[in-house]
Image (cartoon, rainbow, N blue to C red; front, side, top):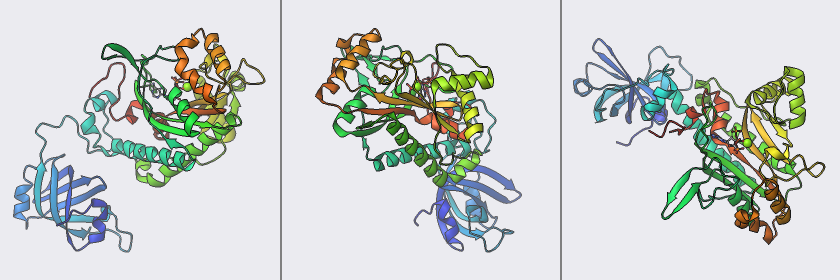
Length: 440
Ligand code: ATP
Ligand code: MG
């Protein structure tokens, strides 16, 4: 008999079907045994009646998280409304035979059957492999999977070529503070903390490129929005007129992702009582203006002309109130806050053609226009106290005739964290790495 997926079972009322899955819950009522069975498509109730003694015998030891194969009759559940679309909640499986495919060989350390487990994040991460079977935690990764697909599809439809850039680097570029050093045969190498240089190199050949890639950050942070390994959604595009073109492309990608998730992940979003933002023009505010708003509206002063995480939260609150938008672009960061490759603003070189995108209180992306003139680039490298000789391969990209261009680095897990309002970004990473955690 061919296996039927649980979501398709309602199409087989009156037939005997074969299902495979994990036991989520077992309940015994007198002589009746109820099993909630879960496969990758959903859950359904299976019932073993006294007139199936072999199945009762086979189910004797069955407990949560057993993997089972079940053959049973698909029946409408008594007392369910008639003439409504059949869902797995409206049916049950009357088990005819049952076989155990695998049984846990240890006592389960956590119970994942309830939607809300009420456990500390640390405990959930210690038992991550099991915790991922929980419906609400699993939903995070269903949404994440759709986010990956949506970014890829949005970028491809906008004419971007998907590339993968190297993550093992010879030199710690951009200053080097937050690089992990690794042994590389007889030498030292570094793990990439951004695909910046290679995506610009890719752009110099292909005009528009994007990457979905691992980013390593040796930052000793203990925050709710940093991990030491994350997945970046990067892009770089050539022949731009200004960074406005880059922001427009990012804005389009964001709403394409939100719309795709809104369409494909209704149940998963509902488990988290979450929703995605509606499409609307994202307000664009100069950073200096945002800092004035913070002072006037919230009495908040910042240091070094830089916005801190509280400031990001407050400016989002303000933008939500004033414009009804969950997102905001802050633009024109001062030169001293941005990397040397940032394009100075033509009207005032103390500022740059750069931006951050904030979503529900948190920075999710940084981007801008880059310098494409090798002389200007070398000058900016020197201005940052660095040596142009250390950036020869990088500067060479621009010696071959490279057009005005720009792009962004967008944190994929932060998007999920903000959509679902997760307490920590670690909840959106399958097996997160932080300062303390390298396993599982
Ligand atoms: P932050 O100021 O929040 O530390 P950043 O400005 O250092 O971030 P960028 O270098 O601009 O980060 O990286 C681009 C994007 O990658 C960020 O906007 C964020 O979404 C994501 N990102 C950066 N660092 C991390 C991290 N440690 N963990 C998870 N995501 C990150
Ligand atoms: Mg940033």
